[in-house]
Amino acid sequence: MTSRILLILAALWIGQAMAAGKIYTWTDEDGVVHYGDRPPKEVNAEEVNVRGRKAEPVQVIPSQLTGTWFGRGSDGGEVRMRLQENGSIRYTQTFPDETIYNYQGIWRLEDRSMTVITEFIEEGGGGSLDRSVEPVQLTYTFTQFSPDQMTILTAGQSHTLNKVQ
Image (cartoon, rainbow, N blue to C red; front, side, top):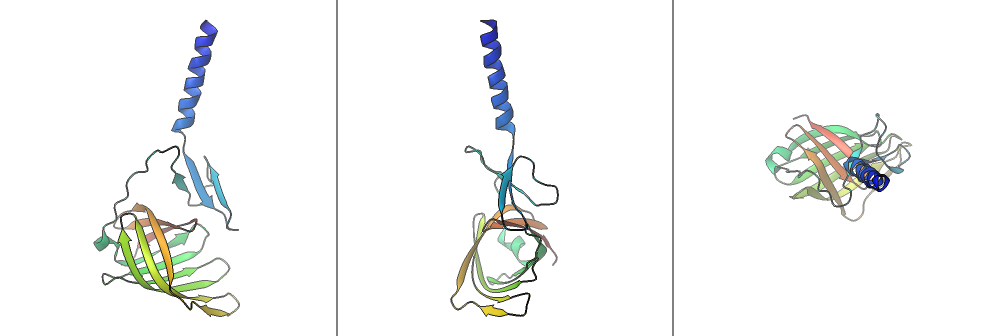
């Protein structure tokens, strides 16, 4: 009887320890998405919601969003974003392989997501140039926001940007 009670208590204790743990996701330099409880120190990992636990609410204030932002993506590339009050956006993303995307378009904020309708120009590391023929719709989800720093998630990539203006 005592051993049965100890077994039940041990199972409950292990279950609580597992429930208290956090799971993270990150993308490596090859574009592979990883999940784990201990991300490497050199990556910008995002916490994953597990079993219906709610993430802390992220409130994005549009007037604090406008301006110029600069930072790095989880792939090691750089991002520069200029959001204007009139709804226009200019966005440059430089990848580690020296490919550069230049976006220009309009943005709209809804709760924790920003939708961007844009055209883009892609410059390859070897000097090649491609331009989108049709408008492209992108969605960025805010996982953190303050007047001076934001973290956005799009297509499995995380970008942490600091306000520079």
